Image 1 (cartoon, rainbow, N blue to C red):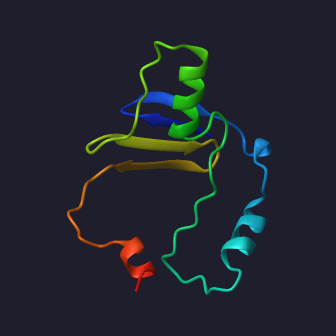
Image 2 (image 1 turned 90 degrees about the horizontal axis):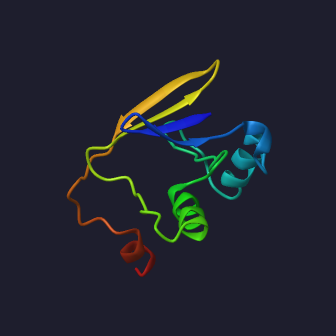
Length: 105
């Protein structure tokens, strides 16, 4: 699997290095709740990891490393050989929705 942001590769890996199988991830997500069509289940990161890990490792290895975070307008492209490519553009949506506020009710 590879991940590119604005056509620059930021991550590369193999599902063989994942700690949990997809079946185990789905099993855990479904514990005590119903999974419905349209629900999105994230599998975590593969290979060199998420931006939090990339930035942490980058700074650990090089104090001059410039952290990078996805921002509005960025094109994110994830590809798995033999499966296909998923491409999305990050968009900001103005909303007053807050999961934290719902939890406090």
